[in-house]
Amino acid sequence: MGKLIVSKLAPSSQAASASGDRVALVPQRSNGRERVALILKAAADVIHERGYEATTMKEIAERSDTKIGSLYRFFPTKEVVADALLELYAGSLEAFWQAIIAKARSTTTEHLADLLLGFYVSTRKKHKALLPLLESRSDASTGREAFRARNLDRIAEALKAHAPHLRRPAVRTIAVIMLYNMRTMMALTFDPAAPNAPGAINELRSSVRAYLVNRLKPEG
Image 1 (cartoon, one colour):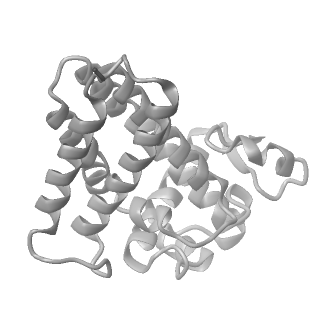
Image 2 (image 1 turned 30 degrees about the vertical axis):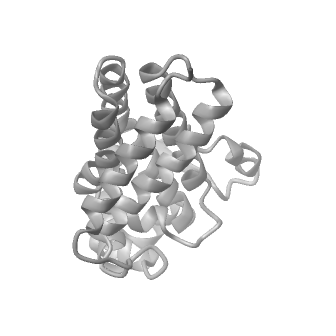
């Protein structure tokens, strides 16, 4: 029927897989794969509507019209569902990252700042559960850490492509700052609970442009 695999986004879960409590079941038959897709779609909808902490496996089962026993067979815990969603999102976003990295080689620094700031915004429009997943306070999901690490690597690649003179420690530092700026832009755009003010988005965009121009210019 299926086999157990360890999430590609969560290499640290490999040790846990020995106990069988943090691994998703990957079905071999088409009807099983369709069921998993329905479960993940339902989970994303519920997480978007209620937040990650408030979402329950019972709600996911009901929304996907899946028996609760079948749900737990495919996804032993809610954290495994979260990791599966984040892995799905990361895979679908890789093409967008590669496009940004390619453009970074020839575009202006200001435009690169806009591309990076807009990444999480466009991602959130495509994957509505992303913000509540990333902002969750749960420490049980290994996918969040891996998702952020992967994005940090891609930001660093884009910065290095645009400014090849930068040394790696500087690239890493700037990438971290940009990651936080990107998350702030997403929160300002979509999170009604985030502190906000008229013009805040434009202020953030202007300050990030100025920051990158200053940090990415050649020395001397």
